[in-house]
Length: 392
Image (cartoon, rainbow, N blue to C red):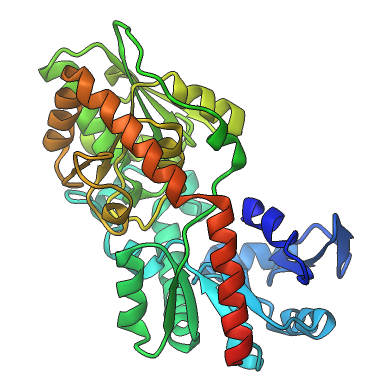
């Protein structure tokens, strides 16, 4: 979004306002580098309110009265909403202003894939700490809160009129909930730093795998542990698997270890936590293959960034991923529920240096074209003009 903001505010004739939930500001609005920002206080932001929210899994990202005041103040000709699940979308049907929703993830499908094969609420609770359960910070609490967000998401999709999307999958989801909606294909802008580097195959004794992941159960952390165990114990491969975006101390790590009866550390998996762009790029460039094991996903930026760098990518064949990767042309797809197939794909790619190199070259070529900034901005500007002419 920050990359898109930079380009959109530079378009002649556009005045840009950015509205977001933020509790640490007393300002109604402020200007910075030609953009007007509106920090909106979320519901239940007081101390008692936060406790109430934790106890009852309330949706804090909601404040319709304040959002309507923002709209009255900025008087937008067009509203672009990022994400289908945000409380920012609750006001779209309250105003007569052309709007378009920029699809990111989709919560309703995520709920269907929340618990991977062999994992249940009972096994998660059994392996969760008492502290996480009492403080409502665990995986199950996130699941219940996501259920409420998914109900809101469905209402927003049903009432919205226009959508930006990128995959066959997100197009089909929109059509399921809203047959009257207009769908516009628009690819994502990536962080500019990723366009400036290119991965090169390396000669090394140890195989290095990399995954960027957040601590959600459906993101495939279970598959990583199962596959890492097979690589080490069954195939005796000398490797390291770097997990970026999570810490070894995260509750989900403990939960997966308890369910599987295995340790990540014992199976050559290291957790690097949050990384800024420079750190992430360095870690990816020093790795051999990018693995994306999510059980449900749309168009993850992590996969797109790895492809722009020219990395060989092995990804689960789910959701919108097949719209990003042509199997065995610019990446490898596998069954998300099958760690044996993932391991087989990893071994196959690493044993064929020509395939490894060709996947990386093809991935970069496709991704650079797909994420071309000038092309994307032209699509956005043209769509804005269509929506303004069409009206609400």
